Length: 324
Ligand code: PBG
Image 1 (cartoon, rainbow, N blue to C red):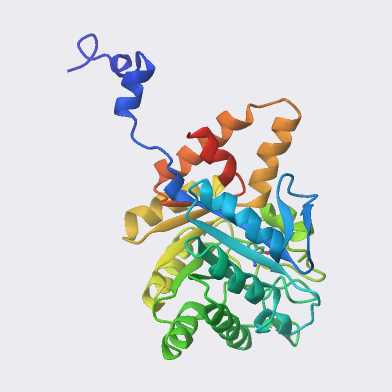
Image 2: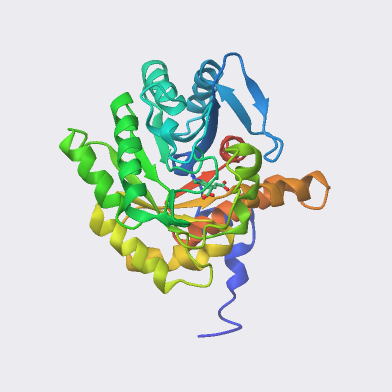
């Protein structure tokens, strides 16, 4: 039966009917808020390349996370900026390092808020790579050994969810194993499974994590953005190795990856709306060229429509206000 009996506009005639037939909507339950922590006290410093996001010292981080919790956001994704960086990322698994101190305090003072801790070397190496460099290449298995130490040190201070983002082969299985043998079988792993070598991480690297590369690029470990079959292989392996949740990253230009992953895998999927996506929207809005709130809601709904369950976004706090 077609026109004129069938008129699809009938289901769009006013906001109430549109509300009734709306297929996807974003909930506060879907949101994960990335936050950055630095050494020191009394620090709340805006990140130049990521307007409206801040470097917090641990004390200020605790205060801010109370607000995040009050907004109903269930989880934060925590990044630390260490005092010193070296080729072996030795600060990354220091039991008294920046993440370890913060997680310990957060779990004492804001216990319900879930802490997802990024497990990677890139913020801790002086060259900015996510791995150990051996004879000019990023050495997979040596890096995985460090990742295991980082993950264990995070679990020991109470991290709820470990998020390995180094794109090393075997990292999920190796981390699952060290957590399990140390009695942390309840700690989740949220793997950055399909993480592409994207140009959209620049604001994060520049001032966010201060992890600018001094040599080369990340194309030998992060994925070629031309590939989607390979992304499915990465996800399949991470699930096999024990990931509880998988991440597709970046988000906006990678909705086909989210959509395929949704069709092929029965596992919670998070999408990372990365720093470059954030600044594209934020800058255009600052110039008065787009309506920031409207565009954000369109982007977020797009993630849900593609099949994402969770959204990691620097806009998480604003979104809680938009959805009321
Ligand atoms: C690596 C990591 C990066 C981001 C999150 N985790 C940078 C990278 O891989 O170089 C980027 C996030 C963003 O751009 O918002 N630890």
